[in-house]
Length: 360
Image 1: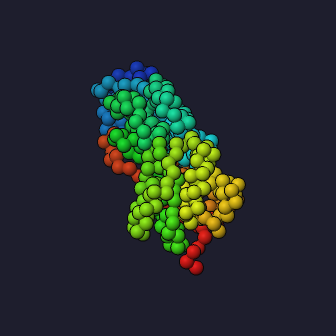
Image 2: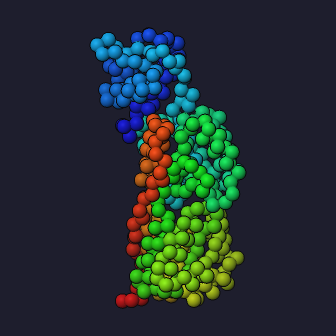
Image 3: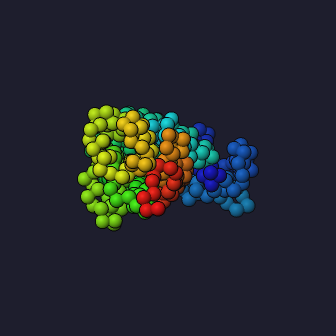
């Protein structure tokens, strides 16, 4: 975003002053010279100079010019680099989120370091250590196994004490102070579950991930909807699974799943990926969707519209989540005292063909 290009220019000025060994009272470059060197607008240059002046690095004298102030100018240690850590990168909704982050940071002139953890805490440890060693100026992180005890609390405390701005996306650890940008997962599950009740379903079951906070919040939305419709017994018809086992459960939990589907008219799935595995399972076992059982997913991934039975789901604002996370980080870099409230996007229901209307 053009609004944040000046942050990269601020870092460049600090490094220029250090490299040129400029002293208090030395005349600095003019606005016109900075515009020419960086091919940016006069407005961007003025924003950068205003921040440098607020930080007492330069002083501007009307009718005379810009001068180095009496404050020692530290070289920018981070080099403008932003660290982005995601559980995955090349599949499902993750490419869209990362693209949204990259779009904002590239427009702001901020170099990016990207690492993936494959939802493993040990790989998150290595990614954090590597990025701290490289002197990043900020971090955007999707936590690994966010609902489980985490061994990286010491690293995150080091990040906090170092004053490195941090923003989480999709989820955050319950003990974390940094803000999170995400879809409202509780509302997402509540939305698809409400839709099933609106369609006349009353015997519901669900599949939820146990090792990340999205799974817990989506279960909460499911449970809230069931309770609101007087169907609290639905919480007995659940299967909890680890994220990496989304395909395996249909093998080692086959009998239990068949029993659960036999006493249910509809299923709420943690996400579209699990829902598509369930569609395959139903087909292999002679269960018709939606005639025998209705299925809903969450996230509206690119597979949801093209699978055997197009899925009713809720749309995940993936690119907006990425953009908002990057914009929030840039604001925190500019103003470390900025508010740290979470940003939650309201999900939108997408109706397709995987739900049968029982009430006509």
